[in-house]
Image (tube, rainbow, N blue to C red; front, side):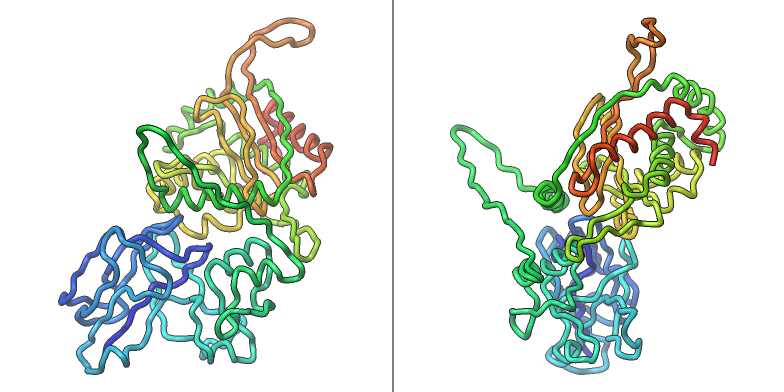
Length: 421
């Protein structure tokens, strides 16, 4: 029998990928589970395994070319006969919790470097759409927009072929209208060099544009004297190194943010625009911006409120290394509740961070410097940490933001308080 193995919708708005490397060619024998190909998407690199034993009779795009959701990765002949027209379409899926498992289609879970968690393909059959529990046919762009706006796509009436939900249907659902900025062409005079954007950079462009279009940002800036924090970190570095941990200031700052979020839970929420309500998270997943060769990626530390400062330091280093190597799990890119970015890592003191939609705030920390300050009427040399906080001004007022920032300042100024619960 021939098996037609398709490239599936693996979620997070990913609807295409670039073939990085093929491990087999047409005519090669493969075993079930063998890695066939590595595909680069906007955020992750995915290893796609063979769904069955057999011989490859057809292969998808070549290395460097693009493959879209629903296109053939490979066709495999398992030696039992049959034609290509009779080949079942095999693709990774994720079972919907609301459906009976007996209704699930045959599947192969790919060895994905960033996750084993994949979502159902956008290319469902008409019969699936006619089941008692309505499951929308939709384009990947529509699914991504629906997720961004917290819209249940199964409640949207599609205007596309066979009732498929289009991006425009999501925009018009419930009267929601999205303003799309017109694209402007750029001309040049003289010698130039054209450099195409990477998939990750394109994803960053979309994310930043979405954030600035939807969220009215307001930014608060301040400085905090951290002499005691510098001393505590210096005294603790040796102990941490014995445990194989690099203790950075980031771990202390995240601990302070966690404590502040517990005291001011409004900052650990998202705004559900469709239903005009706040979703206040009872869990704390701190996203941290990681500088990679291709651009910023923001993985998150799960349940950061359950970790000690040393555990946070270990997780920061591990997560950063995995992200830079593009080995981070897809689950670690999802469900962030509040983010932090470190301008100091770029030798910068101040900055105005951009909120990661649909979060309500992001904290920025600059480079710690020693400078003259006035303490109790006297000029002294002190270590100073520049900090900033960007908030969604639709939900977070300046007073609320100020109180949140004040809590963080107090904790960093008296770091022993970070150790007390």
